Length: 289
Ligand SMILES: NC(=O)c1ccc[n+]([C@@H]2O[C@H](COP(=O)([O-])OP(=O)(O)OC[C@H]3O[C@@H](n4cnc5c(N)ncnc54)[C@H](OP(=O)(O)O)[C@@H]3O)[C@@H](O)[C@H]2O)c1
Image 1 (cartoon, rainbow, N blue to C red):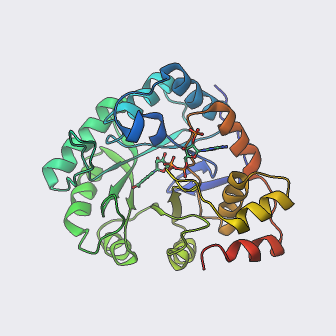
Image 2: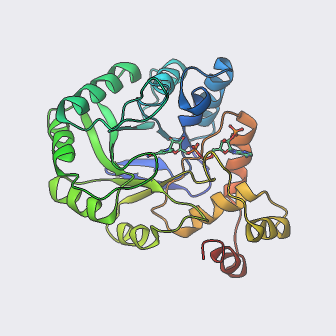
């Protein structure tokens, strides 16, 4: 499988590893509400292989997706992994019988989740592990130190190559960085949710990636008259404008849009290359006011 990239946005160096800024988020490949297997197993495998063939070298997953479903699909589709591929996973939550996401951040929980990710992805060391804080409703204040120290210890044991944090406040980012270096922050952010504007810029100054989750709005696509107006003017889709805006927002922004559809994957790659003018950006800036 080819891993050469002519993807929009070029590359970014995550720690010591260059990845395509246009990546892929695997969460939506699991069943409804991220529980169980996909309805279309072969389609899910095809999307993952198409992502790699298009030159994507950054895939986001978690043991909690399914649980274990997206990791097992990634392994089935792509193992043995191309040398250039970086698979980012996250720990900090389990799944319950109702499909909820109970937090699980004690040292024993985190070690178990890391071991589960190693087993289900079929690797001896995880490329990147994000310590996920908060809950399904968003970030929550509180210390990240104990949890992050546990992950840093597992990194020192050789089980993890790079560390990041997710669903975190700026204070938790700062606290984590006193424990161990991070290569990325993965938080909710898109054209309509720009609470992290200052954090994006601060991280860019320190060469730390910002990886927005729900770049297209997640389970509810971004709906906005301004977005539709700019898209119509450019003869593009709202999805294309939303992705292109993120790539133009800052060089440290990495995309991980999700899709179950190979056609949508190719549409998104083509669309993210759209060039937005100063006038377009000013109009899009009004969405989050
Ligand atoms: N750290 C965290 O707490 C956290 C939380 C949530 C998600 N994440 C990560 O972020 C990634 C991205 O989030 P996400 O996938 O939930 O949301 P998203 O990328 O904002 O949106 C995905 C949705 O957009 C649709 N879509 C994508 N391209 C489309 C197109 N060209 N035309 C029409 N519809 C399109 C998809 O439907 P189709 O399948 O029909 O294309 C899917 O329903 C996840 O995969 C996951 O890895 C992390």
